[in-house]
Image (cartoon, rainbow, N blue to C red; front, side, top):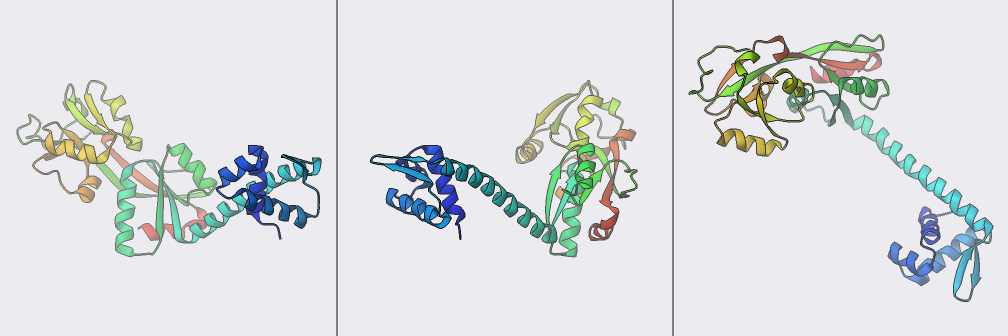
Length: 275
């Protein structure tokens, strides 16, 4: 039976042009590569090479076999991928999210329920998430709106409330709640890559945002700095309350988001894993 390694060696020889360079790339000896190619020729029972004193080239049949070997190895890689994907579907939940909040909630629920599943998250736009659900690359997706599609079951899961964290000496600290207008002209620390929450910068056009992409660096900044920053009821549960800061809810409707869990109708049972 043909060994896929032999086909890869054949292709490498074709690509490199000489046995010497092919052997170096494959990190095997030249005699070992020569013997392997000879065995391949014998097993196929066709003439692959024209051997001259200091040169080996391909016959027409050899070139044809190289082309077919490339196709076969591509199919073999695809086969391996779908086999692994099939296995993962039985042990891993692929979940698409539109903001970090659902990830925190899901991880917390799974720790309590100990279902044995692994979770693989990906964050995308809501349109991309719905497409991934319909194409079954994600089994569950979270959106910030109710999905109205007869193929999909969409249910509200939780609400996330946006707050601003300030020092007790800050002018806003005495307020029970504020609006976005109260934040005008302030400098605010902002963690980026927040999915649907990233539109804050388009709402608060007169706020100076000091953006930080790395979450560890952001946590160091909010500890060391007196500048305000955003928190939510979800991050409070996950990270705890802001040490030494006062967290004030923002009352604008854009500061509260309802997140919906979405599954294909045939996968309604997955909702029970998360609720």
